[in-house]
Image (tube, rainbow, N blue to C red; front, side, top):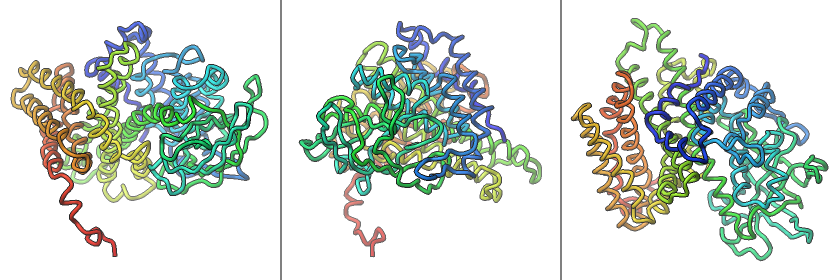
Length: 562
């Protein structure tokens, strides 16, 4: 089965479901005309389908290797990366001052989805670089921007994110990596980092590490952390890489999936680095990078789910058991609900991206609040859907799904990392019910009011189903009011089901908009979502109400401890 980039589906959502027209109407993004959007999506789709997708299997069967301290990439990955770099896809949303195209994040995320669906292991390289570009644009000195951004945007160099250390996990404040001033504006970085995606490669001439470390006077915890640029090779005055820095790949992790993506254990031994942003302001700079990556990882889940579903549908159409199994009721249910969830997750991600674009173009705080609210939902729901759809696609294959030669299991193995990346989905959910509810639920209620108003406006389509969407939004609104009155333990205990319920209501809203604008199949798919997927929000909100007491009361031995 050959992956086909879903250009038509993405364009439909941009045109009819999310407010991308408002983005293109701003002065900042006036170049994003319909013809420009069509050209970008078509060309990115062609590259993804024809150049990147054929590399996906090779990356799985021939993983990246560490040879004499140097990472050797999977066969063909150098050509694939060259196509990405030469096409200008890395800098699609980057500042034109340093060689970027300055186009909306919504387009960048659409392109990222197609590349991830084609070959997730390779797409991870430009994803991390794009996050580093955004962090540098917001926090780096003009000198650092001039030296690094053109190389990163053009694809000559790639960027990484170095947070996690052995034993620290998500507790970033527990890091032990040290930064000592050298007296010349540079710092000497010493420590170890783990889980560094594309921490080294032979597809670029230099790898630039954004490394969290603590200065000698840095207090314990996250408030005493600074961020440093630590390149693999030290650049000269003209920006050309010269002598090796004190940066070493200790080993590559042996992973469940994404074998073509080298996940490195990195050692920094008196490596020379330069401050990004202010001293002890590392978390602010790193969060810029992480927030970019969180939405992008949600998009990855959608992309891999799309690819898996395409293969499952093709297999079902060809597999004969009393006729093609695509005619069997249960197989058709699996394919239809998967397609409906992919649509919902894609729409949520693109809605988040358009909110980011509107916030950037207008400076409007309401758009910024909308983007902040949608980011954890897009990341968690996008990746959860990717895993569900990949798992269901294996099931559609029956016994052949468990056989590696079919290739369908790779999608499930590859996408399984995405709910863990960039803050686990549990962390995303706790962010939603915690930080994102510090406004008392104002941003959430504004979105839910919008859904209810839109449902009323479309009541003529199918009164019963539209009423179900309105009722779901109203019920979620009431649950949100109760949530913000509860303590954080109770909120956190119900965070994951709350986020899932919110995502299901959002998915129904975007399907409703698609039903109003599309053809009969768009309407049928919307009603499948409303009838079969949306109702699960009720059970999830019941779990939200359960709170923390029953979990706390259960003994550790009942959880499996000896």
